[in-house]
Every structure is written in C-alpha cells, then in structure tokens.
Length: 513
Ligand code: BES
Ligand code: MN
Ligand code: ZN
Image (cartoon, rainbow, N blue to C red; front, side):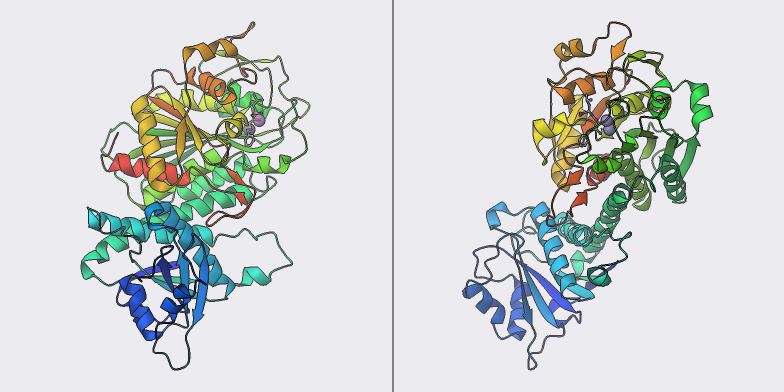
C-alpha cells in the first residue's frame, strides 16, 4: 500500500474517492468538508439534513459527483465518527477502517483524505502533536481495516481482486506537513506490523512452524541494527532448557529459540527484554484439548509474532532504544514421547517443575525464555502470551490482562494501551495466590486450579524472572475475533503489536511513567 502526504486542498484532489469524517448529530461541516460541499452544490449538507447520514460511528454514505460538478474526485465518502463528546483516536481509527472497506467494495483503487478535525481534535494543545496522532490513526485504521487473508482461496476470488492501492493524506496548512508525514509513517509501520502478525497467526500451523518463525526472524535481521541468533534443539539441550524441551518432546517439528537484538540506543545501555510465547499449534498435548475451536490454536503464537513485529517496527522507525527479543517456539503435541502429567522437568533456571496439565505449556516455555532474558541485564522484562482461557472469563474480549512486580512498569503499559487503542487492565499478584502452585514433588507445579487461573499463571512466571523489573501481558482474550469489526477482521487480531510499539516509542522518547 502506498500512502503519501501532500500539501493541497482536498477539493482539488483527483482520486477515485475523497473521504470525509463527520460527527454524529452535527449540521456544521468541518472546513474541508464544506469546501468539498461547495463544489457539490450543498448535496453533502443535504444528505445530513435529510437524516440519511447521521454520523453514527462507522456509518458510511457515498455521493457520486454529478457531470456538471467541479470536483476532481469521482465520489465523496462520508464516514461517521459518533458523537463529538465520545470522539477518540481509536474511533477515528475505526471510522477510517470502515470507510476504507466501503471504498474497496466500490472497486475504487485510491482515495484522498484530509487531516481534518471534525471533532476538535487538533484544537487542544499541543496542536502539532495532534496532527501527527490524527494522521497516524487514519493510516493505521485504513491499513488494518483493509487487511484480508485470502492466500489459500483458489475460488471466490471476486472480492479479493478489489484492492485500494493508494491513499493520499492531504494537509492544507504547510506548518502541519512535517507532523502529518511523521504520523503517516508511524501509522504505516505500525499498521504493517499488525498485518504481519495477523498473517503469521492466520497461516495454518502446517505452514507456520517453529522453523518458519526462525526464518521470519532471519528476514527481520536484514533491517538496520538487528541481529539474529537461532538456537536449535542440541544447543537448548546443552544449555539445559528443560521446560521448553519438555513441551517440544511430543512434536516432530524441531523447536527453535530465537533471539533478536536491536541496538538503536546508547552503546552498552541496558536493553528492554521482550519475551513472546510462540506455540505454533497448541493441541494441549497429552492433556488434549476438545475438538471445538481447536483450529484457533494455530494463533497460540501471537505473543511471539507481536514481539517479532515490534522489533521490526522499532528498527524501521529507528527508535533510539536497545531491545532484546526472546522467542521460544515449539508445537504442543501428544506424540509418543510427549511429556505426561506427573512428569518433572528441570528448567533452565535449575528450578524443577511438576507438569500437572500438559495444556499449561505456555508458562513452561516462557519460564526458560524469562530465565534467558536475565543474561542481558535488561532494564525491564515484558512477556506477552496467549496464556490462559481464564483471562477471557476475567476480562472478556476487550482487555489485555497485565500483571507484574513493578507498578510503574504496569502503569507504562496501561498508558501505552490507552494511547494505541489496545487497552490493558491489571489483575493482582498477591502472595496468597502462590499457595495454589506449590508442588508435593517439585519446586513448583504448572497449574493452580480453576480459581484465578490468569493470576496463578503469572505467579508461576514470576518464579523465573529473578530480580528483573517485570510485567506480563495475557492476550488470550483478545488475540482472536469471532466477527468482523471496523478495523479487525474475523480471525487473528494481531493484538499486542501496537501496544508493544507504543510502549517502546514512549520509552525511546524518555516518557516513562
Ligand atoms: N493457549 C492456551 C490458552 C488460550 C485459551 C488461548 C483460549 C487463547 C484462547 C493455553 O496454553 C492453555 O491451554 N491454557 C490452559 C491452562 C490450564 C490447563 C491451567 C487453559 O487456559 O485452559
Ligand atoms: Mn495450552
Ligand atoms: Zn497455549
């Protein structure tokens, strides 16, 4: 997708469509919309007056240019932002996503959109920063909204032939041009990070194996400042990664432990460590999952994919920060030599783990990833994982769970989540919960029973973080969508990607909580 920024007037743009955003229940048009409407002899205002277009969030209406009208674009697409008092950058992202999809359905190949301000976004101080945010939200919403996963369709190609190829973001004020360029760049990199993760998760597990992940990481290492190391099974055995190897035992696919290092910050500066759960397919192992919805477990690698994408985005944005990404990758399968309930594994840390349920595999591979992170003396460690079904019960499908041992770090992640539209909510990690993961035969056991399942999983992880400042993101409730939404399609959502990029950007810019 080509997204360009240009100084100019929206009414003079020659694209297949012009996109304008409007607030619900308002008669007055934003100046850019009014300028377009002047060329349409007031037909936009008429559409609103008639009540046909109310401006309800994600509502889309289309007006065609009449032969005698002096508009360069063929059509005008009006998209609703909802009520002014509820306006937010995420609603803007949604409106852009809904409109972009409607434009594609028209078989239009290009559209132009002004960095306009129907809801008074840009009037609050500091105005310049808001131009960047608005431009970013427009680019992100369009890119994510237009995402489709059609690789394996050989029939029903009709809808996939339609594609928007070019978006022009138009700025009327020359002083806002640089900000708009920055925002579009940020939105493009972040949006592409999101679609990259969705692709990795939507591709089936017979394609995306741990080996495939390792190769994807090698490609990312072609970016400036990125280095990759891939450990294979014999190397893991020598190191003593017994927890990760214990999960991998039941599968014919060889596990990989991927390390990506990005150095954009000061030489010798302590890195941010990111650890991402990468189970390319989670059958449950010997504690086999029920068949219903098991196919969704091809996305049990969202955490690792988000970490890969965040490193790639950091490199592309040249963020001044050091990062080390650790990606333990394996399948969880019930093969003849699979780990059995009751087996005891010796983790990289030396701690022994009694495996009660082989379906609690994510915490096992993260245990070794977290231990390995300590080698880098990281400033903070953040892990991200589709870890517990209990997270869906606790928070539903609209919040990421966040837990950890440092309130400031948790606060940073919550703030980043609000900024980027992938919000996180904290659950407690009190010492009382540790009782549930005491083992009779080993140092710790891998399940804590039904009560507080997300919390006892995090309690387990905390045993492997050493003295690091650490937080854990549970994305099990948000990584998959059962329906199409404004900028999220049915299937893998790529959640966590924007959150990690926002968190890294904030840190790189010295904005810590
Ligand atoms: N990958 C699953 C968690 C999951 C469930 C992610 C639903 C996305 C949607 C994880 O490995 C798992 O199976 N967890 C178990 C833990 C239990 C055995 C303690 C669970 O949540 O049931
Ligand atoms: Mn599992
Ligand atoms: Zn899993």
